[in-house]
Image 1: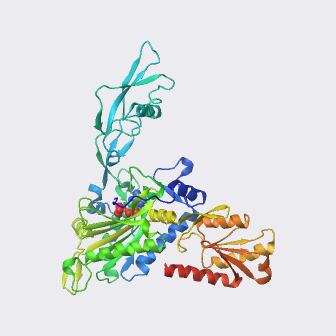
Image 2: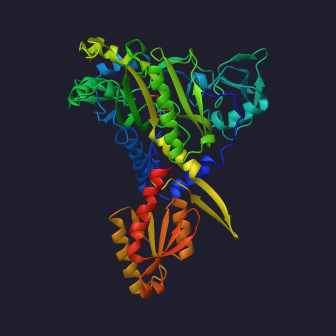
Image 3: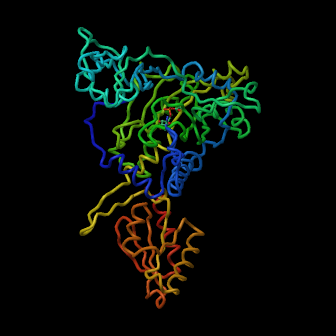
Length: 520
Ligand code: GAP
């Protein structure tokens, strides 16, 4: 995953973003009133607007702006043989081990590398005349100090030793390198494969119903529909099928806010093209299409607001590549948690279609009329996580500025992605004529773009509120407006204000939004 480039620090912490998202209605912990459900988040009123805008920007760029990609929406529940063919039933797993200590915590084996530790026994010395060794309890830790911390956090209460005097005694000659829980100091079991697919049942009686999987990726929906789309849309190679939607993975350690969750959204394209040997003079082969997609997708991230210097590429080595993959480039972003994968672009060769041919018995070969032969296309797959994309856009948009004696927090989101495009305020809320004028303008603007009305605070505070959620335009109706039928339009980024006739506002903002889409 990581390259040798010097490590950079992100300008904003994850805590700052999490707090802003909660406070301003972007993202909440899932089922919070029941203390949440690990690995799930709910998008609030502003978060869902942002996410819809990210989806739509992706859809426009992948489908509407091109003439070689079709969109679909396949079912989340698929015939389980799909996942046998794709390899997910047999190989989509993480190696897991359990702590034998009191927490019984479960870890991904590669997250707990072997460490040198010593075993410490727990001796109850409350009765000085008769010290007592506590059962077989042994805490493995790199030092006695650490063992004491672990004892207090994890062992004291479950062993019923609260309030008793204990000492920890090193077991002579026990120091060794092994796998131990970094939390409770327990020994770890040998790693076992744990499949990451979540299951449910199709049918009214659980005992007899078919077990099905919640899809762990959207990609297979495109592979199983390859022949349907190709024939119904009369497509010739090269062409792509794209979709976005929910995917589910029983991640062992969901963490870092919406970066790694158990339920998340993907936006994926399977681009079917000719393998090198079938290409004629001047036709792009699979390697060239792969390069095209790496560049196309990188430009999309930059166009919508990620700083180019916050993106880098990681090319997987031969050893890291999945067995079906010929090449894979991870587009990494400088998240608040460091450089991490945002999108992967893989050359999946003809693996998936061939696997589905084998499992289903259906012929999924492409008939090339010009060459008068059948062959199985190669596939290039750009696979984006929509939630990670939202987190990345929030990260690079987050800006703190000093404005005179005040700190201004502003989300400099691309105008297409901003949840709200315009906010309208009456300068005085106790002047009914001003309020009526502002409400009428809001209704008019709403017809063209998402606009809100607010009169719940003083004007300075209202501006700051909208800055913090990334609203590109604020319109103020003041006392003069009643006379001159003009209002003040303020730009989020420059904070500059222009006076415009009230009948010109809609056109002005529309033109600005259009310009942002066209030129960036
Ligand atoms: N079809 C290929 C595929 O699914 P992947 O690298 O496993 O590839 C693609 O997933 C993208 O989906 C990742 O780059 C990431 O952005 C997103 N993603 C994967 N697992 C995720 C999770 N648990 N939570 C949030 N996003 C995830």
